[in-house]
Image (cartoon, rainbow, N blue to C red):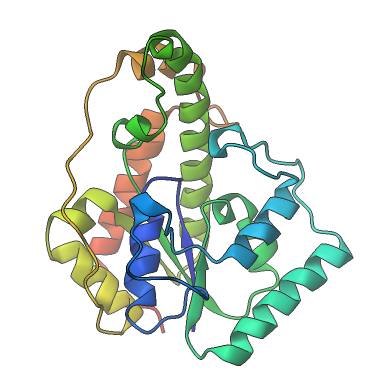
Length: 252
């Protein structure tokens, strides 16, 4: 089985990929378990990431500055590269997957080329993700206002697209990062969905969810391309997860 991990940057995709990889689902080559997230081990398949960057027409663009081509298309050469990537992983592993937050934006292209697969989506409120992006320092308070606007737009875009993907895919689970980190119920939900015993890779982390005047100022000007604000998107993410809780059976 193939597993595609989706979600906004800094929202728990690395944790999910790490859980899967250490539970027998290959998420990419060359991961060193001794190197943690803060030291650069994001459990991200570099080949999948390179393919996504090519699809989006970016190189080292900061995640919240990514623009999405409209329409997003893959020419025959790009499609062939994706097919070769998929075929190589299929040949090497019975159970495999890949994680790259950019896949949340490029998934329509992947969906048309992947064999039957499952989607593992994860979300986190913007207040908890924002501290990873703010600059701080002497110039930070003023620079962070502009960055907060970019950040919220990116958060809205990634998570609204995640909503569409999960709603359209019966073989998908949507996880709440906070619930996954705070107890056993969300962890066991993921375990049932995967139908494999998980190797617990969670580590205690301090909550960074604090009110931010940067986000407060940015909210009226930061929406997804459809015009939806972060508050509406977050409510819908919670509603989708809630509906899945009432129907916990894993897909066939």
